[in-house]
Image (cartoon, rainbow, N blue to C red; front, side):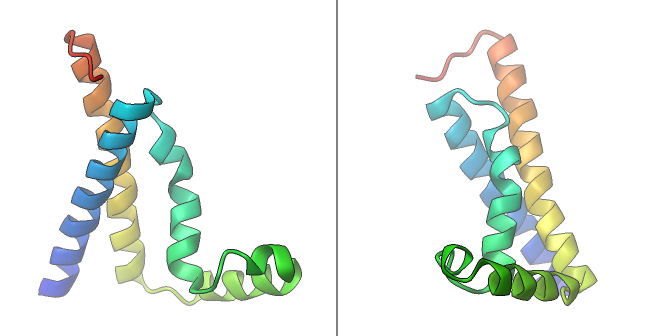
Length: 103
């Protein structure tokens, strides 16, 4: 149970930080929130991204079966990362509205 709580907080903080830095550098507020599903696929599928180009049918089938096998704890952890990316976009919007400019 402790590992679950630590993992949720860790994913929130990591993806908040990554999204915040991307938002500052690229000035695309919701970029990480849009890219997050790609990151989740890369985390869950446990195979090389090149497999989607080499054997697309087999790779998609395997990724789909991996998605069906994730547990509720995994879903909670991944959702925490998505929430971190969303909160980062909200914080950047508020900072820009307050007059802060990053880079």
